[in-house]
Amino acid sequence: QVQVVESGGGSVQAGGSLRLSCTASGVPFDRYSLGWFREAPDKEREGVSCVSFSGNLYYADSVKGRFTISRENADNKMYLQMNNLKPEDTAIYYCAPCVSVATIIVPASDFRSWGQGTQVTVSS
Image (cartoon, rainbow, N blue to C red; front, side, top):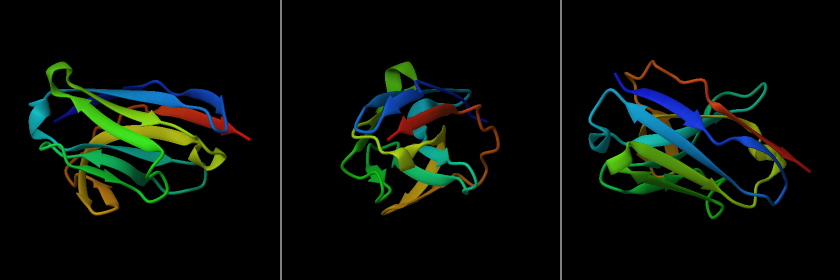
């Protein structure tokens, strides 16, 4: 079972940037599609972005053009560069194995080991 640890969150003003990091362990990193999910207060967890094991990139419509996902297989790390942040991006961000079809991004069905996440707060 893959284990994940997220970091890099913080508080910024609207228009600012943050870079989130995810370190994964426990499985062959380069064989997994990995993604970012977020959960805002009183909202369900939603898929933000996913990078497949082959390098294909997927983004939710709400972040397309502002967020960039990447991975470094040699370091077992995945990143999310977030630019032009908006107050509606405020949430706890989690990484997890993902499955994507176009802009639909969901966690892998057998994933259970969610990390603590990292808080992103964007003020107006």
